Length: 319
Ligand SMILES: NC(=O)c1ccc[n+]([C@@H]2O[C@H](COP(=O)([O-])OP(=O)(O)OC[C@H]3O[C@@H](n4cnc5c(N)ncnc54)[C@H](O)[C@@H]3O)[C@@H](O)[C@H]2O)c1
Image (cartoon, rainbow, N blue to C red; front, side, top):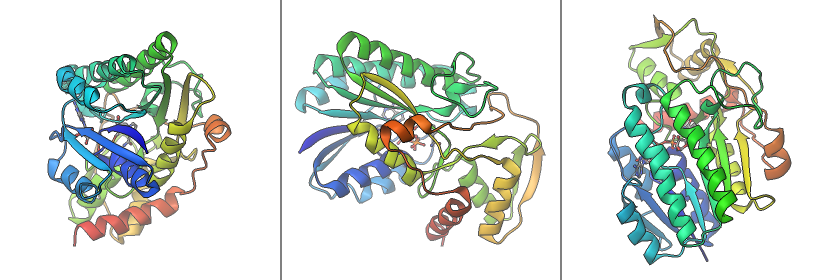
């Protein structure tokens, strides 16, 4: 059995990763999550409810900013791998709480890398974001494109996280694999994200706020595909530091997305058009050729199939 630490394992993506690891039966899994109230901690508790009864699973409610607490946890268990997904996520709230984002996403990441160094942990997978590409005009975004134009504090903290991963890999021989997730959706999606938020409001007959003219484009990635990429990154061993895009490599406009949700719900949206939001990027679009080549990444769920699947889950939660 290998010991793996998953930070943020009560969240949307982290809880799906834990499902996958539990299904393999070869992992002793420790999750660290502070169950903060960025969205309801009750949702996070329900994400982990099925995990808590598993013998090879341990949940620790702790904050990655608390380095003394982290030191206790690392002293107790020798981890083989770390998948670091705990973060303050969300672009718009980062504009009002930049310090919280920096403390969690940058200092928290350094705390974990420091302990990885101290305890000789050799594999560190970091959950980064497509937002690091900022307002780059060249699409699709490729991993070696410059990332010096982030336009939100959130994006800047993720870029900083990647840089500090590179530093630790270079200095201390820790393999760091940074995964740039492109807007992830599926069962348990965060309630602040558009697909979930829109589905809820449309169902309730309430207006949805649409920022800009609906022409912004996103590459939406189904959570099962993301998990396939994260799982492959845990085994990745071809270089000491690598960055990978995990997207679907297919974009839809915001207007098209709303239409897909309306069709799946069988209900029309009431649109409340709002000005463009500072911090939002006009487009995301992943070049996934490197992930296909080096991780055997093979995303399968196109948005046209994924939205009905999401809506099916959403309905099961809101009966
Ligand atoms: N969902 C997406 O579309 C998306 C896109 C790009 C990147 N990401 C990144 O993927 C990761 C997971 O995102 P998610 O959508 O599952 O978000 P999430 O908010 O559902 O999960 C993050 C988890 O981290 C925990 N956490 C936050 N701060 C913490 C702290 N200080 N100490 C301990 N735990 C803490 C939260 O309680 C939460 O359960 C994040 O790093 C996020 O930035 C997500």
